[in-house]
Length: 445
Image (cartoon, rainbow, N blue to C red):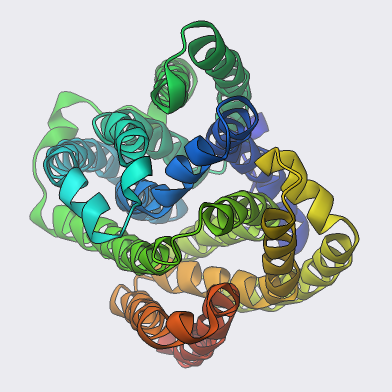
């Protein structure tokens, strides 16, 4: 186990962050493949309407999965702090509490989602001719949220102790399986977009099982005993506070995305929806380096908070801010060179409206990756030092901003307003988060 763990508590900072982040980056790329391969196969096999059906509920997918993942990520932050303090009993109790809280939360979320999906799709203006395909896809995902939660919780716990490599191994295997199942269920068994959802669930279920087996065999500090499941009120309050603050933060952000999607759907243009769907998948892929460093920062800050080393946290943040700026410059050059061919690859069409609008989205977002990266790292760092309210406020800013764009700017400027919506909001959020983080007493000491 030790050979696979990255030391966050001593040694060079940026080098160790990058070593930790590389497996996370590859993991997130493969995880994104679950949905992106679904999209590419649907677009190239079933046509533009089916692609638009999947795209019309992408924000709902992000909302459901984001809430479950937020709980898991928040819980693993508490485990990372316990690991940093070198208290193995506390670590085992944190894992036990995470299992209890996470299982109950994901089951409850599944029940709520299954009951309220169809009214929600009507509310966000999913076009009537796309409704049945869209509902079939998102319903299948929603009733299996516990599977997605399980993988991300166990992967998060492994990362909490510095092991980002093994979650990658399991995810690569299941991603390849996902591609095979996509082709089998869509092309051979003719299950349509529902087949894409079923393939995703099965593949992630297998990756969760592999994580569990590895933890039991190789990382005994993460395996609690019966006595560790006794409820510690202070610990459970910390777990629930951290888990639910991240979950509600994700829910608020993704609720804003649902509102934004309603504005896109309200344009009532399948080609625009398809363009945004393809561009959004590509955006998620190229965002992965920034997400990966942010996840590494989360583990780094959580462990060093437990070890009471604020000077290492300060140095970490300065080095990663510079990393974001350099990566965003490279991404901007790339997008101006190949954005349109990439949109064509994902959308599976030569339609000029799809290609031009999708490419424009990518070109506008590319330089703003620097802002988004700094935003995510600062938000995760605040959570790592135990601040729950400030990141939640930033999510409320994003939510309100998207409402304004949907109500005012999208009706006036159509899809161009969609493109500029998030970058404008990111700038405001980043200013708020940076100001709060660098004024925190623990960081200033």
